[in-house]
Figure 1 (cartoon, helix red, strand yellow):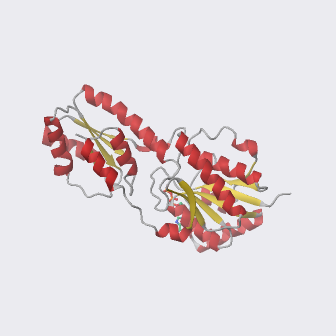
Figure 2: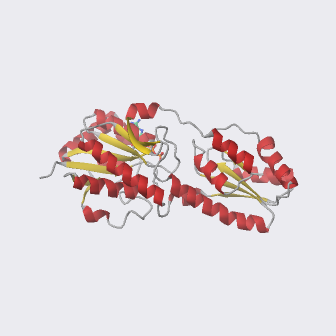
Figure 3: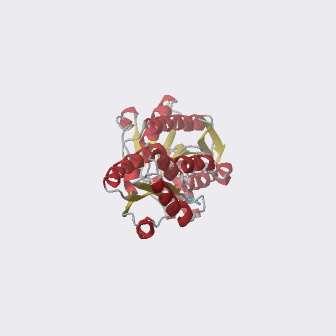
Length: 322
Ligand code: ATP
């Protein structure tokens, strides 16, 4: 006999691996005796009662696909007290006893509000930026970085052939993790991230000139979206150093593609854990990764945490990019 229904939705910006979370939630939920519903387009679908029944075969072949089969959206209406009330009422009418929310901090605030309105919610960090303080890893991060790395490798081929400097802007508005880890992996001469104050003369121009003296003939500068200004930076580098410079903004290409092994694995672990928590009667929790293990936190506690930037890794990048 069914234990009732649970639902899953994807919210905020999409990330590769969200489908693997949906698959894990559906299969773990059915395994634990729940009926599982998918909610389309995040909280907007919850307000519009855009629910679909999910069975074991509804998630066949999605573990390897990017994007989200449930679609994602942002909803201003949901943020209002009336919106939260309506969403909770819709859950009640659909017999939904718990919701798994895959998204970022904003989506977790929504999950907290919905939990407070009587619908138990569990959040899963799904965002390419790796900008969730409570978790050392977010689903989508590895795929986005690998995409960025492949793109920078291709840019390097042409940059090398022309003895150029390439300024490459990668995603990350508040968080420089994609820039840092991609920059190290691509041998960037300089990496600019929002977390570390920089001086263009000291951290970019002087480094280019110094490494040129050591025989370097082409240069990669990786800039996080949150720092921005990559087109102007390329122009300035050319003016100051005489080295032909080009800027490339990678943009949305980083959001797509088949998820890497790491994203599929973490998505599967986190989806399973979220259902386990709902089955145990838990509410208002976020699933996270700490020291490589899956853990969970109260949502408010999770939202209050402060992200710690990996300065040690940043210093390694500086040391070896000569
Ligand atoms: P990303 O990191 O990709 O931007 P996110 O989850 O942080 O993802 P947001 O647009 O901030 O993305 O939030 C997604 C949705 O969550 C919003 O459209 C809104 O419906 C809901 N939401 C955001 N903040 C709140 C809040 N304070 N209270 C209730 N709901 C919220």
